[in-house]
Length: 420
Image 1: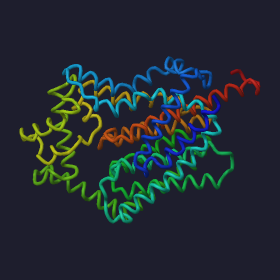
Image 2: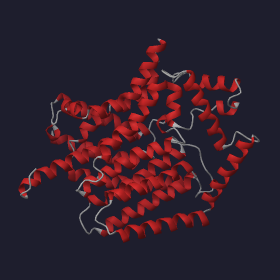
Image 3: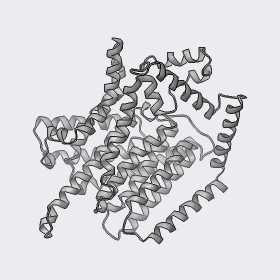
Image 4: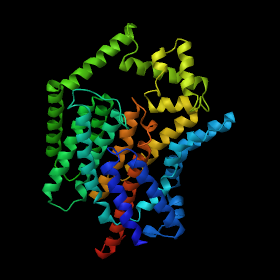
């Protein structure tokens, strides 16, 4: 089945290069990966000596976690007796994660490292896109096919993946390492242009992960980098007009909301929707109000004077967890927590692995799950279709890299006179 390795790695590389700048490209790549996986199953392939069903048995908690959003939708519809096929679309893509994970195992380890070029190209193209759409930061657009806040977070994540992939390069390749540090700065610039406070909040999370993953570096260097990072952030606060303005607006929003003078501000709307979603969950704790009934439920809250009419017109709660709780009840709560934290577990167990390549692949996975979780506290990431293939492909790719790297280390151990 060697002929599957090239199309799979090409598709993954193209995904990172174009998914955020070319509409529908994410869906095309994801569908093609699924078709390749089905072809491998029909032909009884065994990448890394694992059939598809072997992988299911070994990683069943992860596969189940990715399927829980679909299970939550089915549970609600069973409770009402009303079935709407369109509610299955996005969730079913995540439920097919097992196929994507398995097909990643066809890629040789050296081929997997070439995805770094897709990341670099994708970050550069994304920076050009947001610079054009924001007119260099003068305006803040809403969306093209991805909302600006979601777009900026996915680009920032790609820049974090790129800088962690320095561990994959041949030693002393300083030019490539410098290029990856540069695209990390480009990712920060995209986040800055987005004017999205939720995106900015994920940067300290990524810094903490880096501090845990990076080993064999003297503490003095780590402290120096931390001080430099703090100085850069301080400089942006002092001289960056966009950041200062957004922080000032947040302070004003909170004052107006608490005083009751204006509740339909950026933060005021969020506070209303968080409260409203909690009320909907308490009134429908097991199965929620349902995906299709959520807009009507918000209008009912507005009629009851719990939220404003304008807040009732918005499509989501600006909080992933509360949104899932309101729409799908306790099943929704458990499903979104499973999607975040079961992959988190698989990556966290290798964040201190002795091998730097394994460790940094685990760091990429942690950045992915915690990045989605952190942004999900102030927005709804999984409302947008592109986020499903992004999360599934990235989780599968980093886990597959860890599996293949560990297998290679196990094979090398006897040759080096070390017990496997």
